[in-house]
Image 1 (cartoon, rainbow, N blue to C red):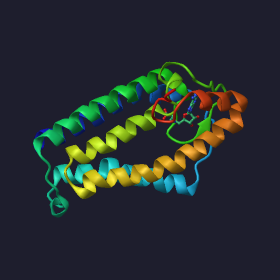
Image 2 (cartoon, rainbow, N blue to C red):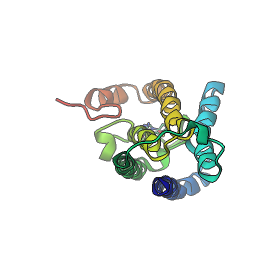
Image 3 (cartoon, rainbow, N blue to C red):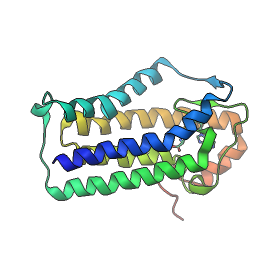
Image 4 (spheres, rainbow, N blue to C red):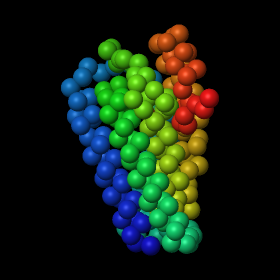
Amino acid sequence: MRIFVVMFWAAIAAEIAIRAPINQQRKKQPKPEQHVSLQEKILLGLLFISGFLAPLIYSATSWLNFADYSLPAWAGWLGTTLILLAILVFWRGHADLGLNWSPTLEIRTEHKLITTGIYGVIRHPMYASQWLWVFAQSLLLQNWIAGFFSIAVWMLFYFLRVQAEEKMMLDTFGEEYREYIKRTGAVLPKIG
Ligand code: SAH
């Protein structure tokens, strides 16, 4: 249904608006050391295709119609709920991580380990938000290429990224990060 496609683009606009001030501030900062491997570049490219380009083609043309699937209306509303939750977690993550956020793996000269706010509960709120997002996307954009494909791409990106990110954080913050891992979950709160 068209309304769910509109919902998806409204959510994209919300995330761009949440990230814009941080991106602006980042431009004024000295460029830190970056670790962008070829693998990471390919994965970021795939994320762009599955998260933006394919949805755009799906929304603006009929080229992907052959890959449509059809779900009952409640699935679209579930998708709407999930994407709203995703935006909430995404916003909280940015509010707590501030300038320590980066699209690729990097450590700033004044990098601080954040372990409070939502980071006191889970270590990867933005990735948690993206998990919610890709499931929402596959319910809102009912198409294997524009919707469901994003889950597969994200799954691959997530497992490779988290491994590399936690290694980088352990190399940088050592014992402090090891302790932090003990008391938090990755994308779900630690129970008990
Ligand atoms: N994985 C986190 C952050 C994603 S942004 C999340 O899902 O919310 C990626 C950058 O965040 C990395 O380059 C790393 O430098 C930084 N980062 C990740 N966890 C951090 C933390 N607890 N404190 C400070 N910076 C962190």
